[in-house]
Amino acid sequence: MPISTVVLQFLVKTPPLTVSCNDKPSFVSPTRRHGSVIHTDILQAVNLSFYASGSREIIGIDVTTPAGMTYTPLQNDSSRIGTKFLKATWTPQQHQVGSHITCALAEDVLGKTSDSRCIKIIVRDVSPCVSSPCGNRGTCVRQAITQNYMCTCRQGYTGSICQTDINECASGPCLNYGTCQDHVNGFTCLCVIGFTGRYCETDIDECASNPCQNNGTCLDAVNQFSCVCVSGFTDQRCQKDVDECAL
Figure (spheres, rainbow, N blue to C red):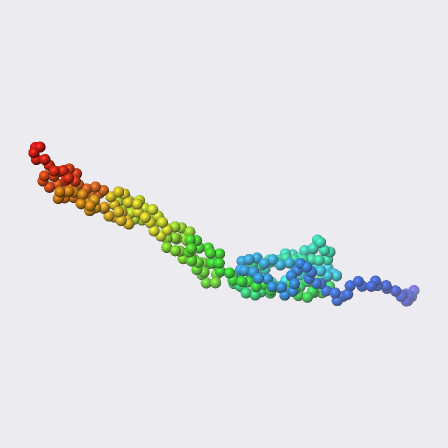
């Protein structure tokens, strides 16, 4: 039997669209405003957050970043339905001193993209000498444009940051059993009785005061003296006239 032809008609009723096909995602708070400027120093971390929302599901946030920036996977904002976000972190290095632009672009399930959200990051060069790392009033000298430095120490100090007082007594400068007292960039010798001088190098001349009387001859010794008396005199200082009548 031949197949009969039946004409069918359908009435399709479509509900009104609640959104326009032209709707696109947008960035929302707490995303920084477009054109914002962040000032930072080398080795100081910068943290950014990009939050996007739209009438359709957000499937991605693409971020163009400076070298070394890391960011989290796309996450749901638990406090707002339809809002997703990611966070980015960047720690600029010495060679990245200057101006950098970070831009983000959100995309929904239909491939519609948001306007770009761009943020400028200005990385400042900070000398390691700013923190005054050299102790005891040493001078910090930066090595080229790096974070390395050297300390030029004042006399009397040594060490990588001038932290050590040089012991001027280490060489034993005090003579004749003198005691050395160390100071910054110097020392003092405490002499035993009978010696004087910076290094206790001088035997005090006990004969300088002419202690021997009656033309006696003074013989100096360490911290003492003796008198050689002429004939007719005796005692320690030749002060006693010998009584020849008593003999």
